[in-house]
Amino acid sequence: MERTTAGWGSGLLGVVIFSGSLPATRVAVADFSPVFLTSARAAIAALLGAVFLLALRQARPARGDLFALSVVALGVVVGFPLLTALALRHISASHSIVFVGLLPLATATFAVLRGGERPKPMFWLFSLLGAATVAGFALSQGGGGSLAGDLLMIAAILFCGLGYAEGATLSRRLGGWQVISWALLLSLPVMAAITLVTLPASWSGIGVPAWLGLAYVSVFSMLVGFVFWYRGLALGGIAGVGQLQLLQPFFGFMLAAVFLHETIAWTMLASTAVVVLCVAGARRFA
Image (cartoon, rainbow, N blue to C red):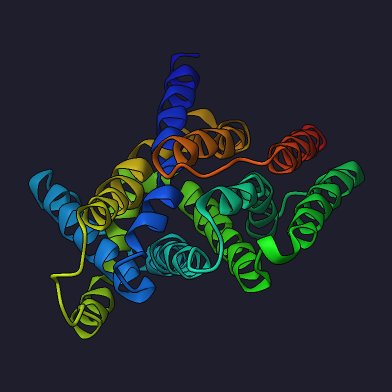
């Protein structure tokens, strides 16, 4: 019971930290290119992770774990950060947060594909209803939205769900913070090279908000958040703790409204609420 309670508490803290990722990315891409932001945040987090691994004398992962760690790196170190950074060049942070409501569904889907689970038919009904709600909202935006931004966000969610499911499974053996640290370290050579190639031509035009956004996504979104999130999944269970992601859109809406002064339309809140209900229903029949 204590392990489960600790898992839920750790997972909730991870979700709160992740909720600031999209608003911070939105601020950062105003002055940094999406590719530089993606590679720089990964490189910075990897160096911090390496310090922890060395300081705590962690054993190297087994050769058989390298593929799973590569999948984690592809999903949450490269795929999700890059695709969301590109998407936020076309859409607002509050608009992008609607898609985060699909993360529990994406995570569950990849848990089925990787773990061989067999959900009941009603699970897929709720899944389709949730996907249709998001698609309908995106199409209803007309000139206020962006097809390119919406498609990039959908791809980002798929990559993130894959990384979450793979990392959660691996963290049961290696530990939560160890999984993200090794995944970051595995991607460091490529990310560091891309960072050097995509360095801004001039640093003078980069404002303080962009630097703060880079700092947040590097330290908190890319490393600290995963320490609590993977620990929560390992202690409390993927299916249960994973549903805490349903709270992330609401935390994100509040952050976008407070710090970015973005207007939150009632249709956006209604769409998110429907997605939350659909994913909750899908979990019940999983």
